[in-house]
Image (cartoon, rainbow over the protein chains, first blue to last red):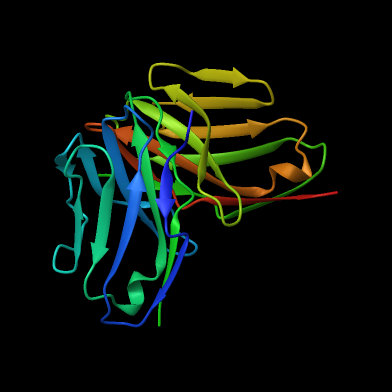
Length: 112
Length: 110
């Protein structure tokens, strides 16, 4: 079974630029999550989808972050414009049931 | 509220047992998890326990849950250098929402 795929693995941008991350969950997984992991901290949930609907986006900074999962499969997370404090690893995860969530390797974003 | 706390660092010798502790605040947690993160990698699920259980054993891993005190622990028997990583405790609340702790860095020395 293929795992959660994310791209790119690394991205360096200047502040005020835009950036987008892509995630392809495990086939058949209805729930998809985007987490932000700042260095030295635990992952923080940004947004959770159930199929193509948003379940929880309470911690998503909506003035600059957006995410979509139009066909209920893959998803993109966008930051526009980026700030220095957005430097982090962005993790995508997917889940079939309410027991296990499987994580991708993440995209490491550096904003300079 | 949603708050998961862990100690930051644990150092053990190879062959010893490691015990990593976690406290959480949300009494409505349904499942509690332990994830492992190696440098530059994503999170790997190690084990999980349903909230109505006290203990779960899986090979070298033993999970203990004290629901009254909202305390979760992970014991790794016969710790190996390959177990060196960051370990995250997480609780599932609401509709499949996962809340993670701050992580415990385990260092295993030969």
